[in-house]
Image 1 (cartoon, rainbow, N blue to C red):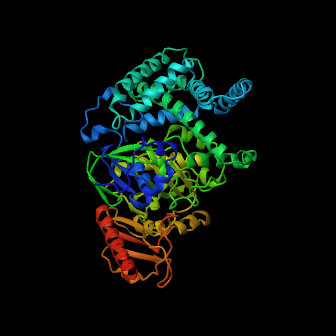
Image 2: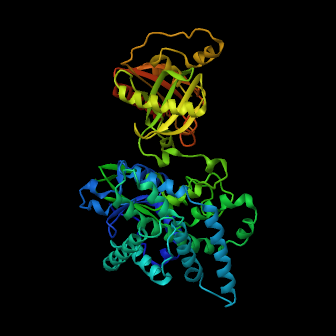
Image 3: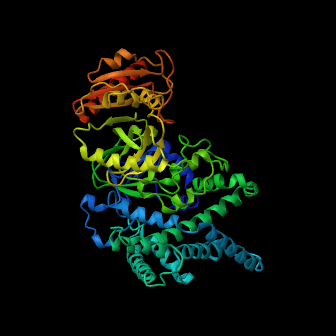
Amino acid sequence: MNETVIYDPFDPEVLTNPYPLYARLREETPVFWNDRMRSWVATRYDDCRDVLRDHRTFARDRRRVNVDVPEFAQNLQTLDPPQLAPLRSLLMNAFRAQDLDAAAHRTHDRIRGLLRSLSEHGEFDWIHEVAAPVALGLTAELFGVTEPDHEPYVAMADAISRRMDAGLDPTVVEPGDEARKRLNALADGWFAQDPGRPGLMTTIQELMAGSGVPGHYIGNSIATIFNASYGTVFAAAGNTVLTLLEHPGALDQFRDPRIVDLGVEELIRFDGPAQGTSRVAAERTVLGGHVIEAGQPVITLLAAANRDPAQFEQPDELLLDRTPNRHLGFGWGSHACSHAAVHDRADTTDELNRPLVEQWIDGPEWHFDGLVRQGRITDLMVSRYLTPPIRTGAGAPVRSVTLPPAVHGETYAEAMAFSLRAVGALGLARGVFHLEVFGEPGRFVAGELACRPGGTLIGRVGESVLGLDLWAASARLFTGDDIVRKDVDPGQAHGWFHLPSVAGVRNAVTPADILGVAGVTSVSMKTPVGAVMGGMLKSSAAGIGAATVSGPTEEACRQAMDSVVEKVLEIHEERR
């Protein structure tokens, strides 16, 4: 567990400019153990992203590794799904209910007034005279609370921030804990304010009733979010101005309104408000070729990941029109910064405007496919991804298994009720539908509803589960012809999955190789033998083809898929 490059976040050179060191770490020791911090450190984009989105393996709730943390102290930052989901949903709904445009206009007016006043002095301290008061004022306005006194709050927030470095400097613990107590007392007073005052506090209190979210979760989270909002805006304001000063001409580019949204994202990627964040391994796992034991912390260096050339072209260049730009400046997954979701509402490019529901909703991803006649769903197939498509970015082939109706009656009932609401909202009286759903039964969230059968090999699986061809059935609903059915076993499980590829290698896998594996029922090849394969990083449809399987249980289908994937990769390795 030795690091070949010494990483000391307090080193003056690192504090001034950490990016040359980050580049060496990514190249020479992308995942390493830091003795001083008593933690693993990840520096590459894929590793950091995978840690942040895998809440089952990497936890924020340290009670999962037997650390004694009192229940009354839990908040948005310390809980993991599923306990986190209702709290996060309540807070996100409260954020989205705010008049952000009005808050932005008032903040702009405040900044202009500050700059007019300060310009009379010839020079001024941007951080303390602009960034700090603007960050505090904006946050107080968003929350709908009286703005705290500036200097005491800045000192309190600084002590709380330094408390996070307790592993490196034990002297920050006591002042940090005292500052946290003062912040909590400040937040407690906000609950007693005028309930009619516009802002987050009023909205949150309105949503609390009947939410089922424990009051102490919400109370603790108010203080946490307020300080996180202040700290994020404060840090981003400082880094942004420094970046613009160091890149002459960049500010002029922002005069083009088409560049604003992309440019803001690029500034956050280039030098964002946070250097990193941490998780703790909830179980023994492997990251970057290193065994991580249960209970060991893992720090993800977000700033290093955001300069990873494997993810970003010209990563050390400020490209204000960069797209796509899937940076980690606001984190990723279930603990991503709440302000990122609010900010995403204003994104205008196709890539940034595409809702990634799976980033925000915890639990599996499902597909509901079926037929509607006279407003009633007559046929329904429920499928669940073993590996959600978003994981394809890590090189994992997408795999989906249907739930046998005879075994999963309760889930089918939940899916039927949810699908009826979805097609009813769409006004679909007859036809075929494909519904993309996230979350657990009873808490489903719709991501997409299409008036067509599902793609890839979902149609073939539908013939095995429903006993009908969904495409043909869709057409016959409108022609009035009888729908042709075949007998099926309602207790049998079925599934489909992609066949993995290795970029740059010529394919040597044949359909016979796949069909020779027990449980495989069909195969569809898109990359012929001898053709150069593409990678698995850009699309959920990546790979050399797809196949279907069948078995007495979902686990049998999973094992058949595993066997095929292992065989395909062996053939690829031989060819390479």
